[in-house]
Image (cartoon, rainbow, N blue to C red; front, top):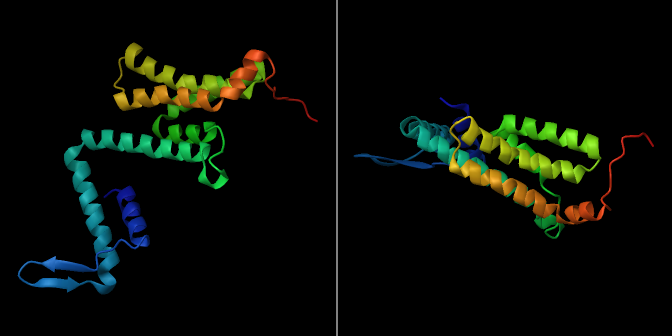
Length: 189
């Protein structure tokens, strides 16, 4: 039994998704009353386990795609938040947190690149942009140099990341080319 399926089922029950009646052949409908939550949880867990056990790779690819879509929704919600008039952050931190769940090794490489670039140039925006490009480079090396299996959805996602980060940093890029971008200071004030 998968813990994630149980958590998902309990979450659905908290959102008031419950079976209140069950149809039993030759008997008819039965009211569940206090058993509605346990029956709902068991049903969702059973269906989830059956799907995961019978479909194998197809479900894992679909789950990967769902992770990407959910993560992008979180990043877009951070960048264009409704609560601040569709003006938010640049999406780097939220994106890194989201990618950490999908490609933890790539995030480690991106963080290393970010730290090196910021330390050498003192430009956080440049570190963010080059860190995001590291994710794409990581995926390309995995697929074409190391001949490892990388799904097309991950490759497309890997292309979208730096494009989105460059887009949200477009004013920073202009300032970088003009030489007017703010630098971070490592000195105590």
